[in-house]
Length: 546
Image (cartoon, rainbow, N blue to C red; front, side):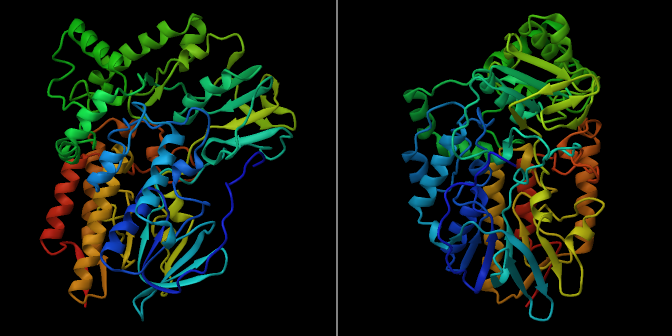
């Protein structure tokens, strides 16, 4: 797309041709994986498409980009010194601050020397005769390795919309997941934004501050909660730092990987309407996504969910002055929380501005992108710039962008044709020594992903250490264990309301992608216990070969 650069280029260094482990990706997962494996004395090669570290926070530089987990918890816990020396400035960290943090981590632990930047992995082929992987890059470089770790990220494969004429537009085009690394000024311009998910909700208020006119093309109204963002006070930062050990312990056993989220014990249906309104108001004013954890059955029972959704709808109506416009911005046909909850700063209030217009593309669909702008069924909107806030091919997209296969011809793309199949979200049967960090079938995007990343990285590195210490050549998930885990993941998901939404959790934003609910809903604590027990029992469900 026009208007995009990928950061400063760095001189290409020679890849190590023969290593113990190849790690794909240098975001939070890849860097910690490198740190752990290097500590075991292993030869590691990290391969990264970007020109520097950061993963999703390297690419997602759109206006207003910010984390939706509180910064003091959205951080590594593996180093006490790191925890104590880094000072977060806001309750919810911005993209620039998170990127500074991950750069600090890379510098502090001297991680860049084992990372090849500006390089994409094109294929990974497992040779069944030698028991090793051959990894080939887009530069034609080849690395031979015993183990492959896909640290490719759940939200890293940007998904442009499939709209007729998308490449015809003569103005500037941007995607929130592939934003330019230099500042973009929309002052005096007429701008269109397609998409009102998380990135759209964060982008729209910021662009509206600059643009002469902003058209927001909305297909599905979104439930968005106030972030309640603010600067952090020195006293509260120090209090958390003094209690980090306890906080991290609680996060690891919590359902969401967030220690500060409540563990609900009451049913929404047992409370009176007045009690519910007080409870929801408290959560609303507190800010953050803990709102849907006010009661234990909000994500399980339609009637309970409706109480939370109704309160949120009333709040949206109160934030938008024009009643007709407010109604268009109010979700009516989805359960709250079944699509990713958004956090916002003045999102709905932005539509009270004279320079902001909502285009309801559910009732007046987009027909095509033209040279001048966006054409719907009733009008053409002439634009200077067009922003696609259309999200990602989530969870599986980045992995399947790599041609992963075995020498006998089994391909991961074919195996996952009807939906991803894994054991614990860590491995997939038929592909020995191939690990995934926060893969499908793990808590991943339903959790504080840093907590999930650390748990996966530690499990994988402990597994590799076990194999190495016991002179084992390879490990592979058994088909029976994989079948049982997939059934377990599906059974848990079917007991929730998640399956009712056309969400990216289900792959619904990607035409042709199988409709399968991909994350594990059983919770971070329960999942960790399962993984730990499996390892402690000699890696139950895995076939290990000497």
